[in-house]
Image 1 (spheres, helix red, strand yellow):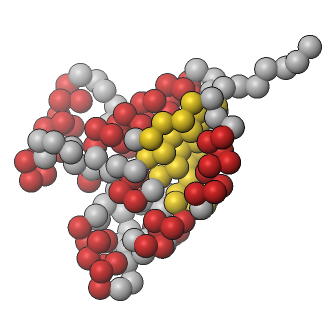
Image 2 (image 1 turned 30 degrees about the horizontal axis):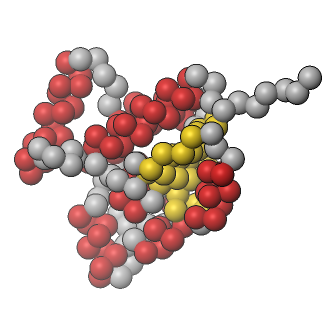
Length: 160
């Protein structure tokens, strides 16, 4: 009798917007809690989810991007209704009122459930983010070919 392998989910996270990161982590934790193997590939603005908050950038442009994109998940703002940073506070307040975990808690749930995090090597190089500026739970910083190999084995692949 052939043994069934667990279903696999591959998520590509390109956005650093609060609601998109929230959706990505809700899907990842839901799938992992259901017994699925989950891999998340973070690229460009989505790398915010993996950052530890350390300053980044070597060149003038790299430091400028590091300044504007500073911080970790706590600094993620909604794509709409940001209100110059006030939207982040409002959404956090609304989420607490409804007992919904915040992004940091969701990321930790994903870690605890065994979700694999990958950083996009090319995006890290372009945005001058060193590996040391990422959370230690990042499995690896890989090229797109590595993640495509993961995605081709997945039963479900989503681009967020």
